[in-house]
Length: 167
Image (tube, rainbow, N blue to C red):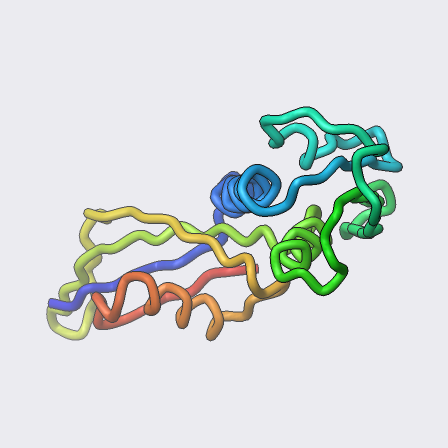
């Protein structure tokens, strides 16, 4: 008997987006005191939505402009972040990197684990007995090897065979 995992793209998952929002929330509430303006009002201003304090543009001496571009014509945003930090500040850099990925790097996967038995050369698969999900945000277009490496980094090698069905 073998333990098999099947990893497939979770088109309805929101784990990667939740991680993105959590990171923005942390950065703007714990690390970067700022005020943010957006140029495209068709999308929410994620910075101002997640902040738990009020500020205005006039409170800050510096500004950083961040462009985020998605995969379709309407997916874009220009964030103007007003702050009092140096441009090479690590936390400001993290915020800029996250905002650039506003429309990209949202890769969610679902994993089914099941047992496979071979009898007389034929494989028989049991119903899945374990389901889990994970996300990849540090690679824009992960390939099968990237997905397997990420799964193994999180859960270890808890399988004998792996089937990857991503598109």
